[in-house]
Length: 355
Ligand SMILES: NC(=O)c1ccc[n+]([C@@H]2O[C@H](COP(=O)([O-])OP(=O)(O)OC[C@H]3O[C@@H](n4cnc5c(N)ncnc54)[C@H](OP(=O)(O)O)[C@@H]3O)[C@@H](O)[C@H]2O)c1
Image 1 (cartoon, helix red, strand yellow):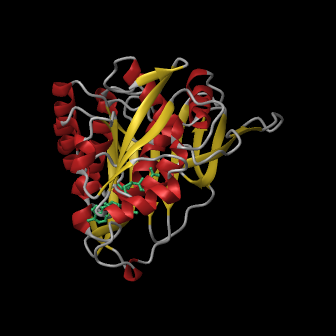
Image 2 (tube, helix red, strand yellow):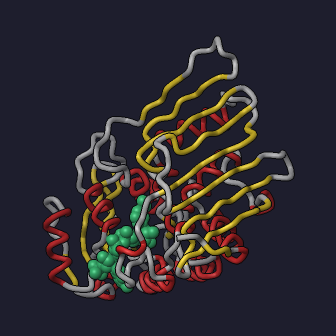
Image 3 (tube, helix red, strand yellow):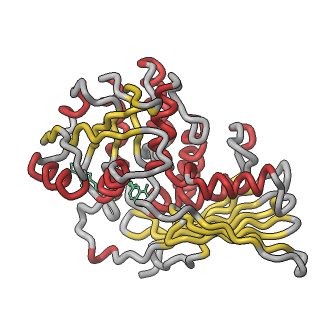
C-alpha cells in the first residue's frame, strides 16, 4: 500500500477467475475521473495457470499481474496488499483465513460466508492479525444508493418509513446446469437466499434501518422457502420491527424474473421506486408523493463507466490507508447480522417446490 499524488494505491491479488472476478477486475482497470484510489492487479490465482493467463489478457487491460496456478501462491506473494475472493461461497471462509494468516487484507464476495459462525471466525482472525476485512456488498457503496438513503433517512423526503418491498428474481433452469454448478450444488452453498436474496434482504435493511442498526434493533423474521433438489428455489421473508411497526417484504426466486422496478420504500408522505437491471445494480429511483399535486422526482445513477465495483474498492483503499480494519458502510457487525438473519431463514426452511 502506498500513495501516488495523495491517492492510495492498492495492489490486488485475485482469487478465482469466474464471472464476478471478471467484472471486478475489468472495473479496477477502467479509467475514471472521479477515482479516489489507484488499483493495481498484482496477481491472479486460478485452478490453472493457463486459465489465469487467459483471464488476465481478456479482463486485465494493461496490467501485467503475476499468474499463479494456485490460490496459495497469491496469499504468499509479498507484492500483494489485498486479496479479492471471487470463488463459490462454500470456500470463502477458508480463503479468507488463509489470506489473513499471510497478513493480507481481504475483500470477500457476498455472501461473506455460509453462516454467521464462519464469519465470526474470519473476523476473529482478522482482529488478531490487525488486517482489514470486508464483505463485498458493492450495492451499498454506489453513489445512487447513498443519495437515496440520505433522502429517505436524513431528509425524510417520504416522511416516516412504513414498508419496504424488494424482489430479486432470476429465471434459472436447474435441469440445464451441471450437478457441479455453484448454483445447483448444495455443498457449494447453492440456493436463491444466499445468492440473490441477500440483496433483497439488504434493501430491506437499508430502507427500514436509519443507518447501520445495532444488533438490538434486529427485526423479527417470518419466512418460507420452497426447496427443490436440496436448495431453495424461492424464498419469501417478512421482517417486522416491533419498535416502530415497520415491515419488509423481501423475496428471491429462480422461478420468476423480477420487474425492473425491483423495490419500493413506502413512507407517510410518499413512495420511492427503485429500478435497475437487478437489485444489485440500481440505476434510477423515483420519488412519488401522496399529494397528487406534488411533482415526482427522478434521480439517475452517474453515467455508466464499468459496472460500479470501484466504489467499494476505493472505499477499501481509503480505509486501509487510514489504518482502519473495517468499513463504516459494511462493518463486521452488519455482515454478522445479515448472516444471522439468513441462518434463521434457512433453519426455518422448508417446503417442497412444485416442478
Ligand atoms: N457481487 C455480485 O454482484 C456477485 C455476482 C455474481 C457472483 N457473486 C459471488 O461471487 C462468488 C463467485 O460467483 P461467480 O458467479 O463468479 O462463480 P463462477 O463464475 O462459477 O466462478 C467461480 C470461480 O471460482 C473458482 N472455483 C474454485 N472452486 C470451485 C468449484 N468447486 N466450483 C466452481 N468454481 C470454483 C473457479 O476459478 P478458477 O478455476 O480460476 O480457480 C471459478 O471460475 C459467489 O460467492 C457469488 O455469490 C457476486
